[in-house]
Length: 147
Image 1 (cartoon, helix red, strand yellow):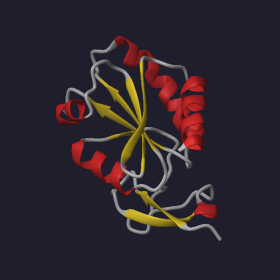
Image 2 (cartoon, rainbow, N blue to C red):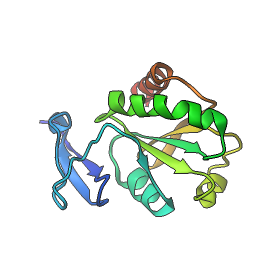
Image 3 (cartoon, one colour):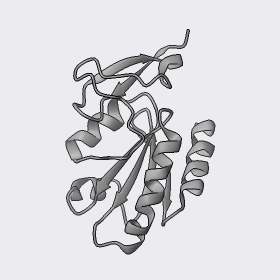
């Protein structure tokens, strides 16, 4: 039996323990009873970012974006598709750099969109520029295998 993973609920932010072999079994939150994986990126503020990145045992992919950014808008559907492909092995978050300027400054985001991949609470890879769903998925899978 695999060690349990800590998974942060996308709805209520409660931290759940899920057995590794049960990740694909559509687990639900022990607190709010909603699905732990929705197949969609989660928009997060600074406080929620800290919890999801810091407490999740699965890798977390973050899209740093802004509403005024044309390439960000173009990549949004691809990022949505990548979420459906990558969950439950990876959690996908979206951080609006205008609303969460503290995170953009902390991580030195100079161009958007920028994808940052976190594992164990620390950044392990970064990619600037828009990508399609296939490239996002391949980029994440290559880096999570190497980590």
